[in-house]
Length: 440
Image (cartoon, rainbow, N blue to C red; front, side):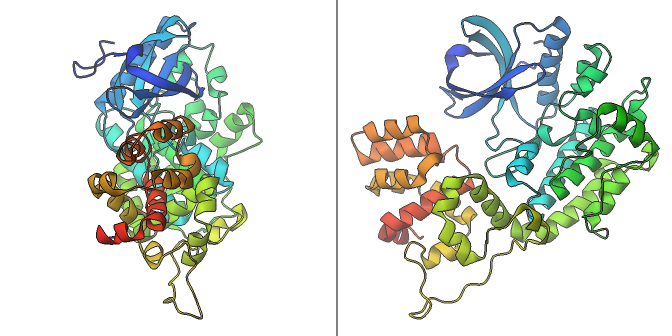
């Protein structure tokens, strides 16, 4: 605990409520919980009750590293958890909660790669985070899709860095540790030498494999066991590039990153020269790409906005067709008697981006709380975006103002662009004049 600064205070169990199990990792379990005083959700990584002293020290070392490199592209740490879990005293790290899982879960749920604009943003954000990490004299040593977490808006942040070597040293050799997940598939060829000491080039290699995963939507060497990868990677085998555009700058970058000679691999500062250019090129298409992916990930949102997707040119695509997907919205015709706009989609809804809708919802909060009366109708249209417990609490409030305050505090404030855009569309449907009067 001494690894944390005086600014990071312990978080007791009495401060947290609405616990939800998220998943398990090498050190224990991860939960989502709401901090009563802060008013937003956090992630709590809880140590197993049978952890050894080295593992406990490693967990607090992780918290200390996270605090040292706190930035926009690295997961924030809020403090050390001290409290009871199922009646037993436990310890853990309280961290920023990332509502859309990881790059690994994103690729799995999409069944293929994201649209190109989102690929370019993910590649750039990971490079920014890694460059910052290296500038603080820290290595990651476990860069892979499951350790790149995603916010509600699908922005990327690095997590679980600096643990690879500690975990390996606590096991019986490092084969057992490597076989957890598929970390070994992201190891550079030199790292299969038992005397190897990690260097920055280790992370550059892992980044190259990670880029391939994001670019193709696939897992590297899916059928290969550790022994085969350890044999083949040092002699030059790499993930297949048959289905990728050989001239793409991102493909050229990944090939440089996984070069067999560590001295030939680019630093992350050099990687930024490529990723920033690509991101700038695709940046106008990012909001539409994010909106498309979010509606596919959330069936309730997808069903609700099906007509919107059709109007702006988001057609349903199979995973195989992602590579050729054009994510730019189609130009829409002016509404006419012969070519009407669907009843549930206004001209404003078509032309206004999800980000502008979200900004309207944020900027007009005070006004909307005062004047909106059809709160339950709007809440019902949001569907699964509103937690069942929150729905019950909103329904129990006696006045519309109280209902709106609760909807903002429990759903809209912590929700991302997609949630706020869906709220705007429901608002436009039930209170069109109010939206117009407020500048919408």
